[in-house]
Length: 281
Image (cartoon, rainbow, N blue to C red; front, side, top):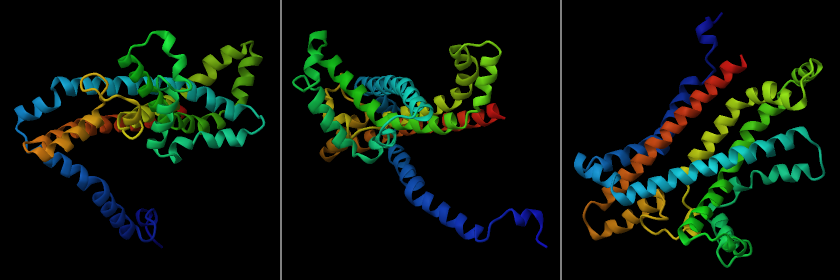
């Protein structure tokens, strides 16, 4: 009779654990460690100068600002889309549900080209934005928000859908039987249950937008200090490294800042998931 401790371990646990750790090290940990090691070639003064120069601060501001706006838009739109897909039945529902995953399957460069042709100042849709009096910088920042919204929308929808599907309809019926209106039942019974999943989807969309490069490079003018995002600045430093100096180390330092930001967001996602399980309990 096996002991309780050994019964919890599946057969082949040691082999599968070793394989998983080796794969994680080769694919994730070693490249990330190499990035940090490359950035360590700079002195503290050079590192601080590289990651906090005016061009870098402007890139951070645009990257995080546009990503935050796009994630907020995704949270609002994604909530409505997930609610409609879960609560209502209509023709071609499965087709619309499949279209939600299109940003996952479509190369982001293709999305950037499509948005550049549609929303450029001479594009089919962009020409109708010209009467709004937007200057070139604001116009390009708006295009950046649009493509980031496109790439991050599935994270919110797919995070909310299973939680909405598992909602107990009897709770709403009980609230309505006690005299609550449909809005009051949604506000005080349904929505608080969905808040943890909504925050998780928002955080995932934000993290996805921060690291986006392929689509943004086609819609932004990438003017240093104005419409240049952080990933493009890193690529610019890598291209300039062929001229000598410590441009490669500067690129690694900028990448390390984004990496730390991504780890912070992932930690926030894990905390939100734990809070969600505790809240459901």
